[in-house]
Length: 213
Image (cartoon, helix red, strand yellow):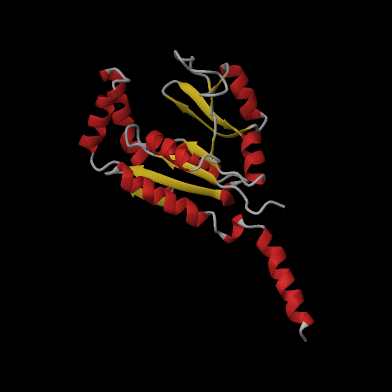
């Protein structure tokens, strides 16, 4: 029996609100925190490595995995499918390791409602303003104006699901938000459900108490 049951830590936000940056900071803070490598049907970009950045697969293969129950969650985003393979996640949390998910509200909802839902910690990141959100997307220099417009149109749909998360943080300062995230993770690791050894400890206390009679 491990000392602790791992957590499925979900970070969601509209594009540009900082979830990828903060996910990277959490992993730098705790190198034992695993990142869930998603599967996707989109084409591989320059510099990406299969199995490290994503598990790249055909649409047929992806759908076969969904049908067989091998995807913990999946979604169709901007013309491509994305999903989280189930087996490595289950193996990690059973071994006491936390797994970090950088996913949208659809994936978060599926994981929360899954058989592993009791072990999830979901956190939504809000931008300080819509104007600031657009500014951040433009400063990234990763997308065309058309793609930025599409992401902005989708942003309110993402934000409208903020109420389905355990915690909601306004990311107006990266350092402050990082500190808040660390506090939340540390506290949730101490939940009774995450500490399976407590049952045996309480039984031992009971035996000790009865032995004093």
